[in-house]
Structure formats: structure tokens, C-alpha cells
View (cartoon, rainbow, N blue to C red):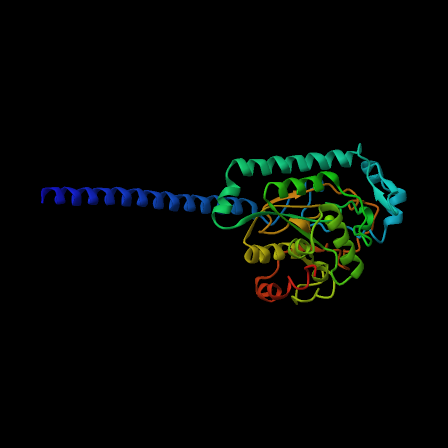
Length: 328
Ligand SMILES: [Mg+2]
């Protein structure tokens, strides 16, 4: 009888021991989840500022000049040529190319080195681990023209053979190697068959992407920014440009469960918005030239402004943005 009581008592003690351990593990796990959420929330709060102060210009909200219309004039008069060590039509079938020993090459390398160091800090600080512990994926957005691909004053590519901006291309490879999702959002127009086709060719050649990867990671928002869907959100006024890249980032975040840790581009429209993560601008002197008349001034002299999408338009844009921007 005594023996049986002893066994019962022992069983109870063992059960209590294991329940205590289990409760400890659960509470530790919950604390970890809570801490991870807090870390992500802090990071997003710190990086969601919409405005990027561009020291080089000292102004905010400036929109790029329409260099395409004035490329000949710039080519003959601009000192940007020296900055790039520009070799006009010096690459493959008539593409411009910058010199590896130019100031541009040096500045770009430094900017990307800084970005890479920051990514390393994120990895060491467990930010990426915190994101993954929430069942989400850390991601970076890259612009294409004059960020990944040197499309020079044309600012697009109709053949898909343009030169890479080497440091940025290498950063993409580094991120992919370290399990960071890379998305590519360009303002090229999907409805332009040459721009669509050149984008596919270049991304395949540069990164070896499959059709599946192109469809999942590459988006062309030009039709929204200035093309056939330009008036999809009415009443904005003619001197307003919506930051559609940020709208797409928000949609992708909801759809793919990504957390944007960084956005990299050469224009304010690339980094503007709450969903960018850290905002990184690579240098672009091609569009910053005083000799070019600015076609975006309206009659009152007001500059085109970049703004976030009015919230009332978001549900409608969310319905269509993937279908009108992704590669099929
Ligand atoms: Mg660009």
C-alpha cells in the first residue's frame, strides 16, 4: 500500500516538474515572440518617414528632369560626362558606359558598401531572425534604371543588353546568398512590349532568373505612374505623382509576407513612402543639370510633387496593381 502511495507521489512530482518546464518554455517562447514583434515595430517606425532629405540638392520632393528630350544638349554641354567618365556608345550595341575609375564608380561603390554593412548589422542584431520568427521574410527593393542597369540619359533599355552598375548587381547576389528576398520594381511600362521584353532579357542574363522568379519578383509600374492607368485615382491634380512603388511594396508585404528592410534606387520615387525600410539613394548626376528646362513645371511654376496614394484609392489600386505590373 505504502509502495503504491510512493509511486503516486513520485508520478505527481514528475508531472509537476514537466508541466513547470513546459510552462517555462511557453512563456520564454511568448516573450521571444513579443520581443521580436517589438523589434520589427521599432524598425518600421524608424524607417517609415516619407521624406528623404537629399543633401546633394538640399531640397525635397524634386522630380527628375526629362532628360530624354534634352539628351543631345546635355551631352554637348554637361560636366556630368566627367563625373561618369562617360564613354558614349562605348558598350555593346551603342550603350553608354561609365568608367571604372570615375567619381561615379567610386561614389556608387561607397554607397553600396554602406548598404552592405548595414545589412550585416541587421543580421548580427537578430533583426532578420526576428522577422523570420514571425513567419515573415526580410526583403529589399531594387530599382532598375540607373540603379542596377546603367541606362544613362535614356533612362530605359529597349534591347536588354545594357551595362550593369556592378556594385549594385553584386549586392543583389550577396542578399540572395544570405536568404534575403530581392524584389525589382521599375517605372518602365509593362504595356510597352520593348520595355517588357528588354527587362525580361536583362534580368535573366544578369541573375539567371527563371520565368517563375521573373513573375514573382519583377514589376513594371510605368503604366500607373504615367501611362494608361495614370488617372486610376482621380482628382489628384496635374502636378502630383503618386509613389506607386510604395503602394506595390505595401501590397507585396500583405500578399507575400515580406518585411521591407531596405529600398535602393536613384530617384525619390524609389524610396518615398512608409513601406521602404531604410532609404538608399545611389548617385545620379545625369538628371541634375541646370541647363535642362524642366518640363514638369506647370504654368504657375509649381514643381511636380511626389505624394503617397490617398487612402480611399488604396482598395481599388490593390485589386489591380499586381495584374497590371507583373511579368507574365
Ligand atoms: Mg531609376
